[in-house]
Image (cartoon, rainbow, N blue to C red):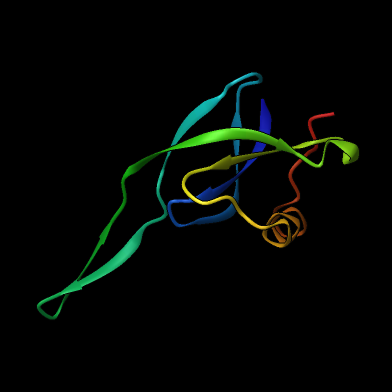
Length: 88
């Protein structure tokens, strides 16, 4: 299994595990609070992430992207926060 950092669907680099060679993976979104008529509820949904390799010169890290691409700064911050293992 490889470490992957998830970006999008409420995730900001959270580390998960995926099988080698996958191109798409589905994980639950981050649980988000919603307030309606003075009642607080929480919801999540299944989100599909496109798997990409970044920073190949450093051994390569896997990221999963759902929606907008993360900035280089966001990726580097997630590497320092979650300590994923490089794939190379």
